[in-house]
Length: 120
Image 1: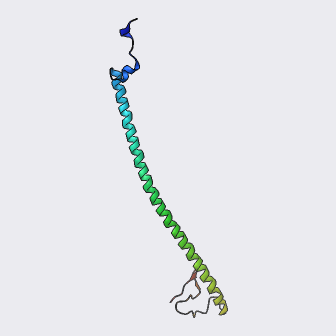
Image 2 (image 1 turned 90 degrees about the vertical axis):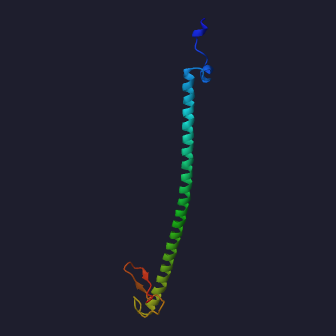
Image 3 (image 1 turned 90 degrees about the horizontal axis):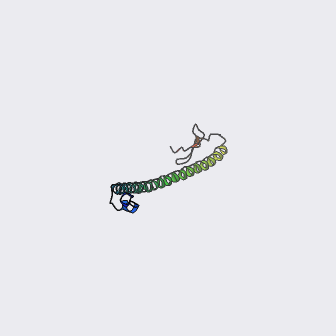
């Protein structure tokens, strides 16, 4: 058996005693570099997601307030229209008598059928 011609064990390559060991070391270094870069990118994306999640929550809150405001205004206008209609019929005129007092609804309706306040 010729001992000098046999390939060294794998541990020999990992310890930096051959040309292949240098390549293996640089491969590990490259993998570590890529791992660190991927870790940094993941952290940056987590931060961006957190900021976007905060902005989304603020936008959803603003949207919710606007929806509630619109619904409340619609309820108020519907209630005001219901109150105006009986007063107009009691006066004997479908559109009201046009003698509404200052600061009250005149019973006028816009082109889309919505009650319009007549505070003039």
